[in-house]
Length: 576
Image (cartoon, rainbow, N blue to C red):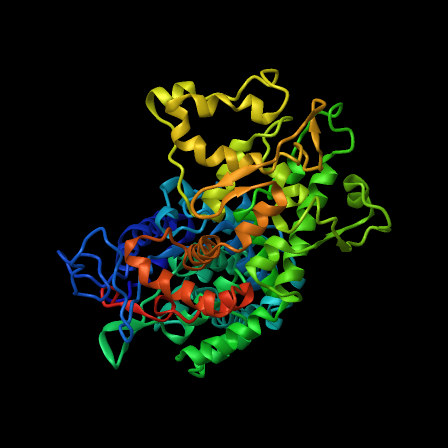
């Protein structure tokens, strides 16, 4: 299939809304199917190589050295965060306009799962409203216009069309993340002219920008690729497409000037060239929001600022403390990844954290002064690493009483990649939190789970993990008793990890577990590639895991290795 025509844009903007909406829906459906780059022909089964059958359906794929495994690359729409970052860098708009749109479906856990990022007719209309607001702000004053092009500040009537073209030729290639195709500049200029009729120069420019921001070429990361001379059944992303892959993975926004120039110079045509730029980008502070975003979604910390607890039971807790908890976790992670040992194991077992004076007072830690966060050594008999931070413990508690089910489920599903099926039928009818007065401790209150055969099937795995965190109350403060009864924090982890005496031994065993390390690599792969990994992605997953092991499970190196897989460097022949 050839690249679609853009001639439907050469319409009055209000009248073109239906055409734009249709283009968005078409992109979401038709092009999305083309982007599923398994490379299989009709009737082929998912396998290691395009056109090669999987001889043992249901069994792990046999990944062979020297064979390219492009994986899947479905069409990806910009998420709300990516949209906000892109219009910020494109037009200087810092209002986060896309947060007025509905939240993405969780999908792979990060809100960027291509399989769930479809566009309904309602969302297309909402995107039009957002684009209109961005365009108006970008052209609201002479100073704003001048940021688009110096000629736009006080443009004479005779020079308006030329100035509009200047804006188009500088803005549109950056917005589309590729050079303009033949005729595209003229189509955008025609839209400017429609908006300019019976109005002002600024209105004409706003009309053009509004259409630009509703184009599938802006809203979607469209990849057409170029044939690989050595493997004609496969295609590689073009230089501009590779720059886009890199930039949205590591910075969550469009490529910067240096990356665009590298694409045009052919520097992104090899894995070595991509690695060089990935290393540069990770050394840039613009990579840190991506780290924060990933962990905000992996961990239960994103809503800590909205957490509410009973003031009588927890007098030292407030929403401000909740916000500081989240900041603690984010600062700790950034420091350990970029300045510390940087391994997932060291993150899980680090003997320090970051606090300011107010948060330290909440923890009961003395000697910390001022509003600035500073490194604080932990009492490692009580806390060790990421999981014992108050924010993680409070975030896995949904009421004034701790819930070992929620905490255990978090560890199993998020950190060990062990799926827990949701209860259905008769079991669902039995699911309800225990009476808070049914026992002095959480272990007492949740004991019914082990007695009821219908519940024990799942809870025999979740509850014993959660019991190991019972030394932390509903706001994450350390305790040894509950209702004047001594807490038993012993627990059990499924598989080979076995019994633990409490939270410290639990996090130490998790940190030493290959299963936990491999799950972490899988979570990053799903985030990086915008997918929920399936069988046909097994060779990609295996390549990432192998590289992660070789690096000593280093997180920063993992991000670089994610740019070195076949899935990152190849498309399949179905997308052409």
